[in-house]
Length: 191
Image 1 (cartoon, rainbow, N blue to C red):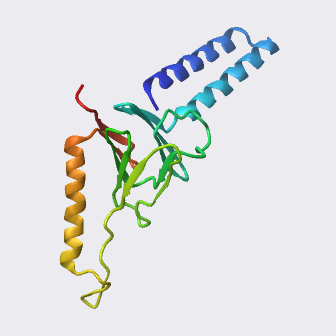
Image 2 (spheres, one colour):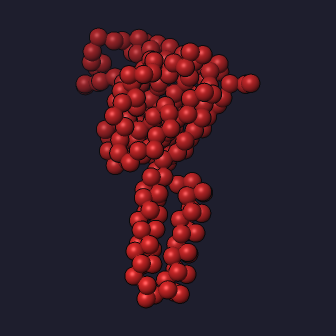
Image 3 (cartoon, rainbow, N blue to C red):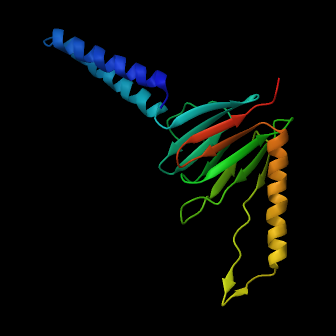
């Protein structure tokens, strides 16, 4: 929750306490105070787990809920989940979103910390994007590699993905989001 919201909530609670101390018998004032408390609670809910971050010309809303975390490439003030143009992912993983010159979103997600990993759902109608999924672990049985890939091919894929990610990180603006701790870092283009 940002500091402006904390200040607003503190001010409203102190104001409510002072008004109640001096005007205990007025029913109209009681309705006013209850309404003020409801508005304060709604403001608290709105900004509870939401942050806004600007990367070049794109403003991202990071909105954490019980059903996953949403990354929305515009300012979103709704109380419920958005209907379109969002990325939904687990509350424990991390994402890196690069923004290229055409405002195309290049999305990388890491495996995550929980046993269900860092699942991702991308729903964009009005934005161009390219998704780079994490390289999944190889499956082993009795010290034998399962599947069609060799160990060398697996490591080549990982290296290729990491090189691509590093190239983007060196040349493009990005936002990195650790959903578990809601730590966000950004890099903008030099102006």
